[in-house]
Length: 427
Image (tube, rainbow, N blue to C red):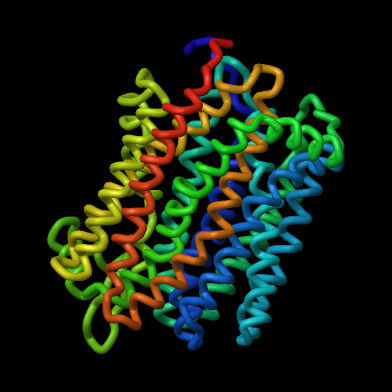
């Protein structure tokens, strides 16, 4: 497009910061279950910390964006770094459950403060000629950081967990320097909405009983299994799959160089780092555009439910990987990723377009409550994994999540048939 506006410098600065933050965040989050187990804590303990960590990460953005409008994006970015940095460093010295829980709560709060600021910067620095490309770049940066972080941290924790936390803290320090030197507050229209007004607006949106039920259904049947996947998979692979056999699979398909990057050596045997393959970021980078093109003209709810069905198939295959062939884990993760790529963008777009134009932001903000419901409850499945492990059937956690997701398909289908689908607006 010859008349596409150029992106200003702050757009690229913000996207660089996004890569670094996702690198640190996912580097810690994807490794954390393995770390906590090595300290001797139970799956139940892990589940509690995961729930509060994710809840803070996804509830805080509802309010931090409003505060940033008042005090400025740059100041709020610095506040998030000042919360991040000491919290990560405390992980090096604290070993008690309460100390680790409070530390992870602080990291979740820092991530929640940070989360809306880069997306808001991208929005403020794009216009009608370049917004699609701009948000495409932003989405790619999120997934690049989220993919590289677990790979690097997996290599480091094989040497020492302290290296993981020093690296994450150093990354946040680098973000602070970049922000101070290069981040310039973008020109934008200030929303000027107080927190009390935001609460009243959310109450107004949730007074629509049909929308409230829909939000609860999304929280229970989409976001809950979604977060459970990311909470559980790294420890499931690490504890119950033959990671040496997985190394041989990767080596045979992608070559020794790639296999070495995502593995470590123990007692002369190379083993895949579980956190390096227990996420969907690298698959999304490769296939999101293709999946979006396939489903962009299809109805929203049938596409969303199809995505859930593919994700449930992914859970089943992940269960089979523990009893049949460990290499099935790659197919399971791929299927879940296809389900995520189909369902997540489509349902967010749907919520935006069912809202009256003047209330689109209100509805999208309120939809974060669905994410928070799933985040809060997701730790229950981590605890349930511990129960299944004690019974000698860890794969049952994946079958349970598959059933949960299938029940969600049925619940949302019944909801749309009894209460009707929301009408998508044309403008």
